[in-house]
Image 1: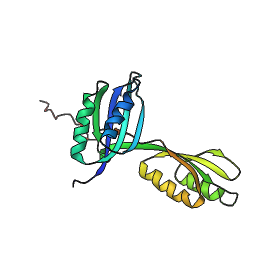
Image 2: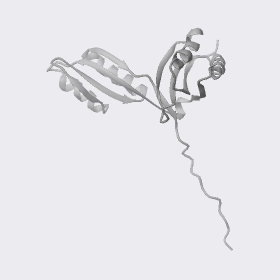
Image 3: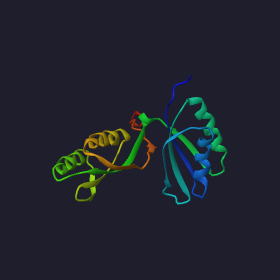
Image 4: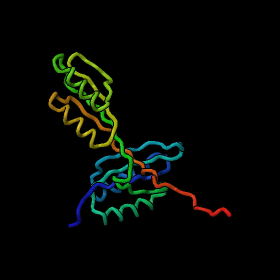
Length: 174
């Protein structure tokens, strides 16, 4: 059996009702679990970008991208290599923070460069944006305090820019 790994698909689509249902339906019909799904309009309000993270074998993924292209509203599909993509996710977490532990919780939030967005008598809610692995680490460090609720936005990703230096050809001056 082929190895299963995470694949990140960036799908540019027409910003119309029902497009997300048709795109995600292709994955559901093949019993592929979508690990993460994020969709929002682009800088052009007529277009949306859907970022789908799915764990599948390479061959079936190729089949599903071919079928995605057959959908009228799909304009472009790019598979992003995690090593060559900028990925971010947003996490909101409500955690128990008694007067005795509040300082420790706020210190963890500060170390991870998060933001406290709501405070109650015995709890607080923090927000953190970053790489998925950073969010995993953050949640693990907060777990001993008692996570009350946790929500992640889903991964968004774009390809990294080319960083190779472009040099002009050397011309001889006579």
